[in-house]
Image (cartoon, rainbow, N blue to C red):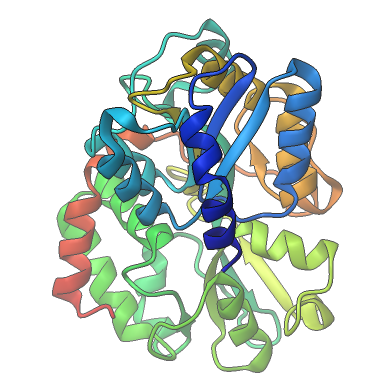
Length: 336
């Protein structure tokens, strides 16, 4: 409801001030109140006012397609590589040249045509119940081991995080291995897929499952603040950064790109460059419990508690190309 009200309230002003000095029009599917600090700091530092429309990623992408060349959008910011790839394939982003972004954002965290860039990351981690699991899975592929039959909680196949994870398995290990993995995980599920990532952690606490898959920032948030059904019993949960002797832990992205018909293109690029600044990168960690995309940026204490790990360095633009294959594999495996 909040996103709908906000969109309705500022649509008229965006239409009349689409081209203006000191303005950038942001379409955002990031739904975190803590991002307010990012926007206010940018406005204070640059004098550029941010006008926002917030909503579901698919709705925003469809809206930008429908608006076409008349779209007031300057920047699309969203979560997960799959949605960034969807936006590019829909033709609503444009290539940009930025020495700042090229220098700061690792090449595997940006589009090959510079149509989108990753600005924060979340590791997809294997969590387990300490009191009942002596030998947790060490890799994503281990989740399909029959030893874990009836123990695994994981989200649905329509979840973008899981789609990108499976696409990365296709990229790193091939389609046959990915198909075997999906079938094995389905056989090992403790329950039908349900809920969000936090609900998978709650499943561990409640005893409904013994192993769960979730993005790191949901757990880090429960370390920092009270999350119902998780924080009170968080000491019962252990975690594994998967594949540390192989490709490394899979990373989900939050990223952004400049809209194809951006009326304030220079301001849009300035906003993306600001997101790569040390100030913004630190805030992604302290404000929303994420890992920065830029190297050597200090982590928030609760994020640092997760420990050091090896991240998968696979090119995420290539992973995005395998998302349709991943969905076919999910369907064939009967993953709800």
